[in-house]
Amino acid sequence: MMTRNEHQKYCAKNTRTLMFLYDADQDYVAARCCILNGLFPGFMLASQAVEKFLKALVVFEGKKVKNTHDPFKLKECLKEVKDYDLDRYDGLLKKLSDHYKARYSDNKMDYKTNGASSEELDDLDDLWMFLKEKLPLPNEVKFRTNFFSDLFDESPYWKDKFWIREKNGSLADRIQLWEKIYKEIQDKPYSD
Image (cartoon, rainbow, N blue to C red; front, side):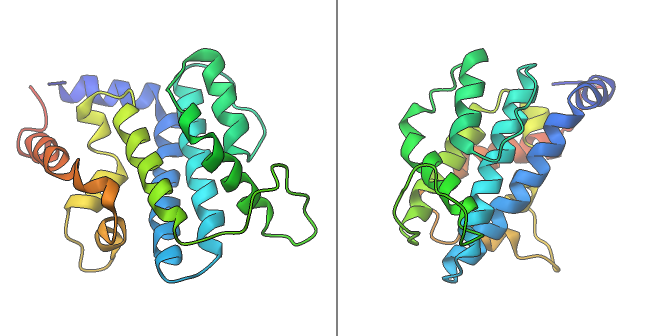
């Protein structure tokens, strides 16, 4: 376990990464809410969520973030520094890029993918959970990010827990282990 001082220093050193992750988690929850309710803007939010998560990884790996909103190009940029084994998601990343561009009807689609479908939510969830598992942060930091507090804490004001869990098959295999780790960190937060 990290000491409180070690945790603070680590977070201070990686503030930009953690801020990208915070924003990404917010967009992921909002995307799921919209898509589950049949609202197309959810796909644009999904693209932004993945974009921000990939930018967090690029920054964490010490590379300058490219000025792009294209998740596929960000994956390629990240791969130049470290291969996170994301090639299996190329089709989804290209589709997300086109969804983001579709927010304006006169934008040219780079990858010419087909329109959006709520069936893509399973692929998005699979990618998101994979990224969460691959996130190279110490557990004491990773499990204090917004996503995990939203997933396991009750809030009388926000429904994030519901929107993360609702029809999320990719979460099912991971939730028990993640909840165990989360509770251990909450019960014994620091080694000092």
